[in-house]
Image (cartoon, rainbow, N blue to C red; front, side):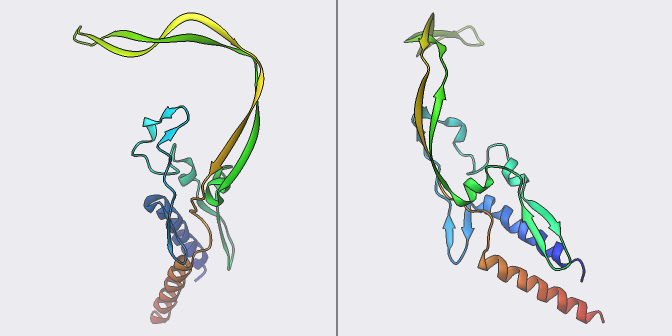
Length: 177
C-alpha cells in the first residue's frame, strides 16, 4: 500500500492532461474553456486555426507532473512560468518602451510571382520600395486579458475518482489476505 500516493498522483496527472484534450474544467459543473479570438488587431492568425487551446509547442501540457511523493501526500505541479496566468486568468495593463528603429517602407500593389510550372501568378500584396522610415522612441500601453482556462486544481469529480480508486485498491489488498 506504500505505492498508493504515487498511483493516485498518476491518476490526478492524467485527469489534468484530459482537461487539455476536452478543453474544459470539471468542477461542480462542466466549464468549457473560452474560445480563442478569431481576429487580432493585426489581422487573422491562420496558424491558430484548428489548433487546440493552450497548445502552441506543447510545453505547458508536457510540464504537468508529480513533483514530490511522501508517505501520505503527493504534489503535482508545473515549472512553466505562464501556467498560473492561464490556469487562473489574468488582466494586465503594461507600459511598453519602444526604442527608436527603422522600418522598411512598403506600398500596396501588384506582385508577380512565378509558379513552379513557369506560369505567372499575379496577386495583390505589399511590395518593398527600399525606402526606410525612422520610428522614434515612444511608449505605448498594452492591455492584455488572458481568460481563465483552468486545467489544474481541486475538483469534486477528481476527488470522487481518487476515492473510488483507493477503495478498489484496498478491497483488492484485502482479498489477497
